[in-house]
Length: 391
Image (cartoon, rainbow, N blue to C red; front, side):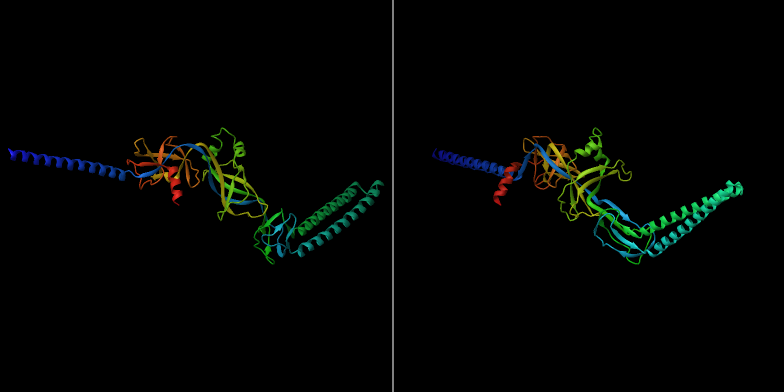
């Protein structure tokens, strides 16, 4: 009997030990499972979608031209005897820029004057003859035929005088053309022909550009023009008048300090490009902008009540933008979105695919964050504040 009780006691102890071991093993499994779940659910910054107002920019390549760019061409041919200005000089309208050899044209003037003198004498002689013949005709000494001949000779002499006077006017005009003057106030461009070179009406001596104001020419597509006019609901002139001031980014990346205004949009759309030429006007009192320069016209676009997300919150597959949306169970799903073409390098304006109240991941897209995984959402603002404190 004692032996039986002893065996029973040993069995009880064994069962108790097994129960304790089993209990400890269950707790370890739960802890291990919880640890694995935590490791499989990374903490990621999440942003809740809200609407707001943002101003973004469109940039368009532009060519800059002076308000007037006038080619200076001589009206006559001849060798250049003097160049009175240098490239880049500021000139006033009517200022002498070049002198062309005046000798042959001065000689032509003298010759024309002599021809006028000869014709004048011929008229006076013919007039004397007519006066004399008229007295004889009145006395019926000469016939009407003879009288008519003398009057015709006077008329012919007067015509020759008029011709000679026209020749003198032309010669004097050509002589004045030997001094080539500025057609407008502005800046002198390059001067390809120098003293001694042969100039002719077909050769441009230089260009004078009025740079007190400049035009920046850029292009808008047909679709952009329709958007500008709200699909034709607004006239183009009214739409241009409502456009905000624009900026000009120069070739070195700096922004021109003075803002400009869109002045005109061409009424013709280029069939080859599908775009229309647009002209923005900028003041240029300091002369920094030169005709022929390049840059970019920056047109601001304001979005009201817009869904704005950071660019880092998006991924791209086959040209389509997407975000990772966090559901109520903190599981990620991929959502394709459409965005406005305007951007500032940091944000996108979402036109479809999201709505206010949606939650999206804004970090680790395509690396730490993938569709189907469960995450531990961290408020983006709090994460940014904590990161700033660590720095």
